[in-house]
Length: 623
Image 1 (cartoon, helix red, strand yellow):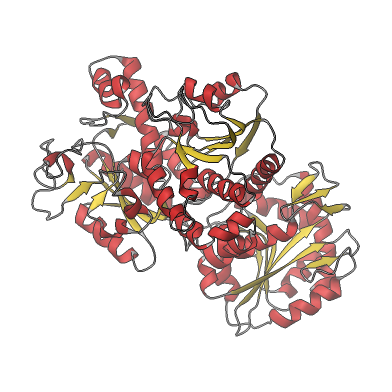
Image 2: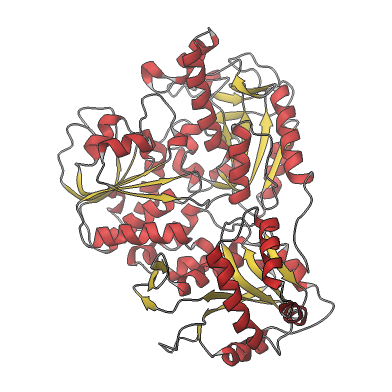
């Protein structure tokens, strides 16, 4: 899946180039692989790239793949050559047909293209190489290198990575040293069938590359597989420019689950601190995220943790940055999870700093009081700069589409190849499988807010047991299982160790949606409750909901009102529950394991997962 056109040898590829219908055949292969038509610009680029490659590959062995889709990503490398010799080498070739190319900075080039500002091809190449090395299963066995080919430009600097017009022999000379031919190793097949395998989580990367992020030295992060893709690069660079030049105004960034909002928000804060922008804050409503980031920052620089603030506390005597009573004048305020703002929060936040940056995802709204939607931002800040993160960073493109299709009750689910997804018949089996995964990554448990509501005042209360027997709801499916899982409760003492220090691997406590929003683990076990259940053709309200957060408009009251016959309340509760499961289902980087407490819903989930993983036939196009 995702391999556009693979050729078992460069000899075969060069022979195919002699076919006058070659470009036409590429169009068909592209449609078959990516389910869309190639743009005219892309087709034109193939024609020019082929001319260059035909000259450069005459004496090169190995296999070749065009438009290689990097596992777990929407990003495609133009060309990858794979050695078929004893040494497993791969070379990524990023090709640009620009006739003008001026490097603006480490991230961007000014070009003659329809969209003149393009991602710096050196950064793009490092990103691809880093992703393959650290987020692809092939990274374990292949040595990956790369070159950028600017086939319409004359040499403008001495970079060894850049190859310019009429330098085909220079590229050929390099390839001869790493790409060797053989008829038996099958390295190309192994490479193109690689799967997504993210090695590190966001908090780990922040901890390891803290100083590089502060100083703007992104190369180390990129080489670790956490490079920004096209949309992220442009958003990040535009925001850095605004911070550097103290631009006055609002910047509003939309992005779905896993699109990199929190990653970019934290990187902006660290970069601003490296620029000595003293009056800078990163704001959340989520007290679990705040405590976790404060602990992480304090472990690196004393005092830097004070840059993490609440945008809303609900306490007039101690207001958040986006509440009445906040008096400090800020240079920069970054608001993550801004969908959770009230209208008043949104209005006040924009006045709290010279430069205000909002990251939001309206599909993660959790209550009727939360108003951070695209329309509301447009109405309040019509002159703001709006940007969008359209890709998926955390879980991979196919899994993101799977979650959306599943929750919207679209049964034409996409094929899953790069993500581990299973629905288990009993809780013990799911936990057992998670323990096996601890050999390769961090695991965690999350759960729907059902069966017990939690009791912070009495740690021994039955209300703090989410899985076990007995439960306060009288659900008895765990009787005899020997499994007891408690809620995480205290944001100040439990959440930072759980997510940042990997105590989540104990698998004896679980987080609700409020305790996992913004967090991640390699493999997540989801306890799907009786609040949202599958009945015939769509998800409906179930038999139990204990989510009473949010005061008078809490979900539990809406749930009960809807069950009593109020259709407006019913659909609102259903909408908010779907948002919750979107969050719960996208916390796992490499995989999500599900145990469902409602039998009919469990059966539907098993069938849906099976159809996406097993019922599709691989469509890899092999010449």
